[in-house]
Length: 182
Image 1 (spheres, rainbow, N blue to C red):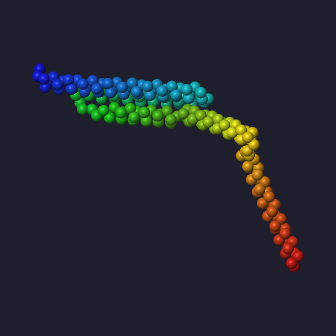
Image 2 (cartoon, one colour):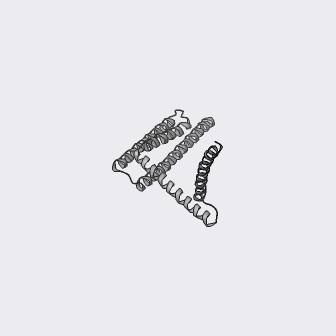
Image 3 (cartoon, rainbow, N blue to C red):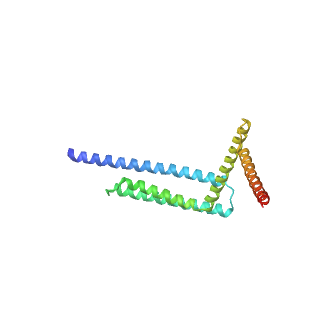
């Protein structure tokens, strides 16, 4: 074999090796992303209190998402095989397959009532934590001798009441002045 053929063969082998490494890395990243997704979804479902039908729908959504990921893995394998057989395959195709699959899998999960229930519970927990933090900050402000929000609200209510009374007195005075002038 000539040096030129050897160089072309080496370049081709290097290209295939790079492509195989890229595909393997992509698959590994996808598996890690799926594992993180499964872990977070499992935690959300296990921590939330939901009805049996919501849980069943959540599991069904998760199964649909898993099917989407499996289809993506199959497409990746097929495109890798096409590349190995000499077909020109754009490396961005692999990225696009995973991105599209991630979007589809997210839709499958996020469209379930279990996801909505888990999010509702998360938001309620966040609101409770926010209220607790607000209560602590108001107590701290009061202990430092500064007026709290409640103090300011009370002053505002008193001002409104004083304005109402002042207005009523002005009306009475106007009626008295009118009666005296007549």
